[in-house]
Image 1 (spheres, rainbow, N blue to C red):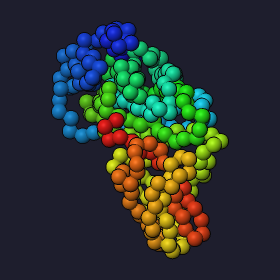
Image 2: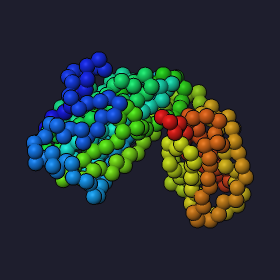
Image 3: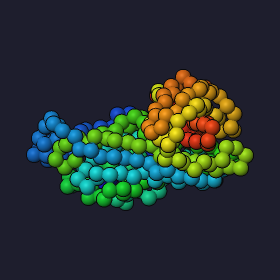
Image 4: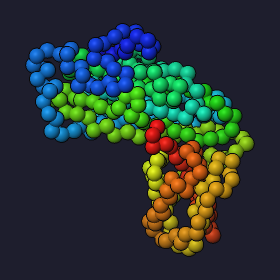
Length: 286
């Protein structure tokens, strides 16, 4: 198995002829393959293999070090893949990459041309075309940061389409169905909203979100309630009256209900209790 390096001038150590840091594409690996493999690689894909990339949820001290594992499922027969992840540069300062799978290197497997924008691209290629043989939940790499703020906050390591869009292929010329799940990063401090225990009766999805947010309750009672949005200092930004029902009940919030991108607390207040969830609104252009 082999990993891939990028072009000189962008922090990479060698110059593969097919590498383009703006649109690196697994099918562009064709010039490196034998005639028969070229034929296989150029056949039209008729179905997709489900593969999932996900970042772990982590809790770390505000102002301290933060390390986030990026893992994958469905990697046993994958021969090539690329994707990108992003983070909030106002809250996290990138410090490096560790735990790279298959003896990879930061220079050989990562496009680091957009670190200032909080984005990094990842590329892995198996020259043998046999498949990486990796087990589910394998750690592909770990991103290491330092929290820039001393106060409590919640943010996320998300997946983006830059600098590399998500693409991949397995050893049967089947394209990957790139399912991706962001990881929530909770920074614990002493002078802001405390970290609330998550209650399974109060769910939000997707999280992070870009356009709309679905809030689901599963309560054993009904009655009047307030659905609220708070910032991380606890300041009330938005509220509306609701009537919760016994069993599953769904509310909708729009990105327009929030003042800007960032992290917030969603709170449901009933005559019996208060339920909280932390959410992240991210830009659709990120």
